Length: 113
Length: 113
Image (tube, rainbow over all chains, first blue to last red; front, top):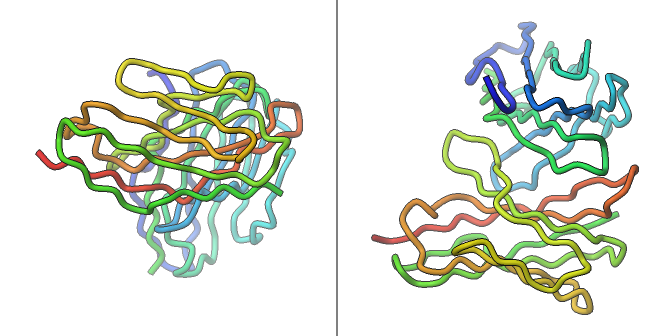
């Protein structure tokens, strides 16, 4: 596989569920990102990892918990979400933070009931 | 921080006509301006970018122009085709270790056959 792969493509969960989103990049990049995309809004940067270390958390609620075990994999663990968290969650990677162009995956469309 | 505005929010053109999408930015330190295209069910894909040391860049039917004095940049698509129909995002950042890419809200381009 090439590029940035995200699974699952679609996810429906209740407010009491726990689920995880997975992202894998095959580009040899060192930086990985989580973005939230809601209708009629700009892409919102959530978390940034550079060489596996978290370098940015944009005031994201603790019900979203990222994990980056290595430079190729990124997870977003979800628990006790709210209906307003329904959105497209995009993963991206770049060569390094600030000096690389982000390449995006296709996203996970999340619906919270 | 940086603020990126896109106008209009929707644009409809006849196949074969040209389309122009405009963005403005607020931070004079920004020096890197990518454009992304997002098709239905896919993540944003980089289509062209420009750095502040040039005023214009072309790639086949697409071109981007930059006016640093006025702090605006534009995407030009000539000879539009139905497959150009998508959401287009502009973004701005300063190119460096601590930079952050700020996106506009996106514009939906519809090309009528």
